Length: 79
Image 1 (cartoon, rainbow, N blue to C red):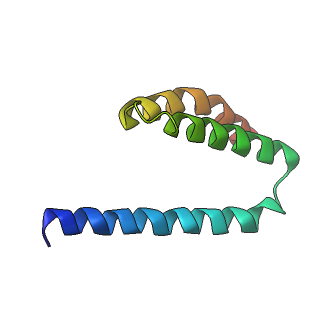
Image 2: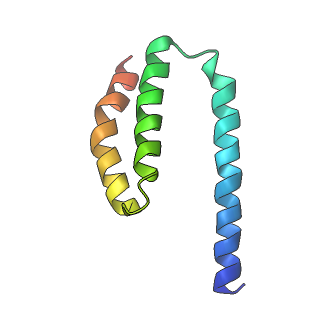
């Protein structure tokens, strides 16, 4: 497979995984506590806001998310 075909296939896999994420979370929301929903929303909305800044490199976004999401993840693990 040439490089372009590989990249196109990866794009397809990313889109499919996004769809799976939405479906999985739709199934979980009804059983999540309000605290868990708040933490999930905090992480998700922060990530989306960073991704909407097109000029920011993915590496920088991931570094920031590791730092910012760590406390929320710990809260969820302890909850």
